[in-house]
Each structure stands twice: as structure tokens, then as C-alpha cells.
Length: 176
Image (cartoon, rainbow, N blue to C red; front, top):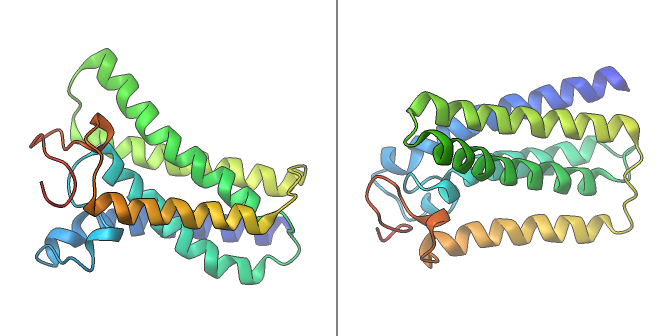
């Protein structure tokens, strides 16, 4: 079981990293398709970069859940993992930007990779430990879906706060 878990988690890590990189460029590569916009980065805001972690993780988790019947806490672990990654991206970005100032692109890319890695290390540990008490896996799944809905909605109806602001253009969301 441990080897199976490690293989799945490594595959999830690879899919998330590769999917995130693909989604970073997909919107522009599809001539700014409105159908692609909800799931890919439409600008360089921190919020849009959080999508790059969320959607590949969620899609792979839907697939992975079919093979993880022995883990009754699957969706609760996935919720903790997704929330960890989504918190780490802005936390690391704003922490080093506040300390250093404008960041080079390689550091932004490193933040994405670090956030994904920490997420999967935490998930793997939670699966192995099996101590996360999940009273309602369906509630955890519903919360993950709600996060996905917020990513889609905020692509088109974007709050005017710094998390959503493109640092290059000063604009917000798809209409920027």
C-alpha cells in the first residue's frame, strides 16, 4: 500500500506541475479563449497563479479517488492539501516580495514548485498517518468544488483587491 500511495502521489505531483505549466500559457495560446479562461491563468496576478495548482490537483483527485477506496478520509486529505498549496503560493510570494521587492520570474516559478511539493508531502504524510478524522468526506468534496466555482466566477467578476491585480498591467481578471 505504501508503494502504491507514493506512486500515486508522485503521479499527482507530476500532473499538477505539468498541468500548471500548461495552464499558465494556454489562455494566450488559444487566442484568449473565453472557454479556457476559467481554468487557466488570464493574467499574472497571484490569484490566477493559484488556479494553476488547483485545477490540475482537482482533476487528478477526481481520477485518483476511484482507486483510493481504502482511504475513507480521501477528500478531507485532498481538501487540506489543496488549501495548503493555495495558502502557500500567496504567502511565499508576498513574503519575499515584501522583503526583497520585485521578484525574478525564476523565483515565481520556484514558489509554484515548492508549493506543489509541500502539498504532496503533506498529503502523503496524512494518508500514511491516517489520523485525520474525516466526519464528512462529501462536505470536504463540496468545499473543493466551491473553491473551483470561485476560481471560475472571479475570472469574470474580479474583486478589486491586490490578490487579483496583475502586477504588470495593474488590471484585474479577464477584462483587464
